[in-house]
Amino acid sequence: MMHWNVTYNDPNRWNAVLAVSGPKWPWWDGILQSLKGNPLGSPKMDLVGLDGLQELQALRDELTHRTPVNFLRTTGGIVAFTKVRLEVYAIPIKRQELLHLKSDGSTEGADRSVLMLSFARHGNEVKLTMEGPSSASLRMEKWLNHSLAK
Image 1 (cartoon, rainbow, N blue to C red):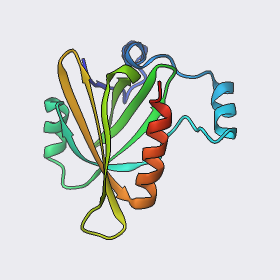
Image 2 (cartoon, helix red, strand yellow):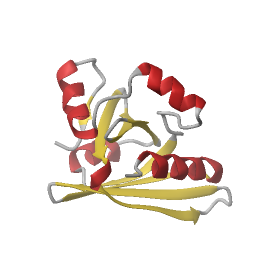
Image 3 (tube, rainbow, N blue to C red):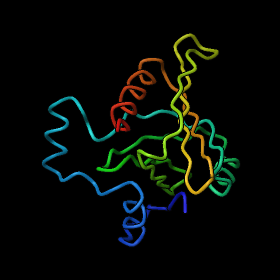
Image 4 (cartoon, rainbow, N blue to C red):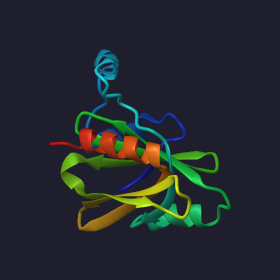
């Protein structure tokens, strides 16, 4: 499976998510990482495109508003979180699954940028397209590069 609904605190779903991305960092390591300038949580951006996860994209297609995306760094990769209506979905990603991270620079507005992250699992490719202020996009790109470094 590529994504899970983690709205409700079901340990079986969290175990499945963390089996892909690796366990969460212990709380004291999270504090130490934050003090060193490497927070476990990423900046938030707008998820404007989601290719490769048809079921999740179908839920998003009916929306008239933007959906946010942010990430959590784990010991073996990252977990992307996006909200659709009142439900939160987790998309775990192993470091080894990363295919490409690309910034497309400014969009229509002078202060907005697009960032694309793609990964593959079991022959299925997924591409997340995110948009936000240029400053948030730069912070997100730096955070993702650091978090997914091997």
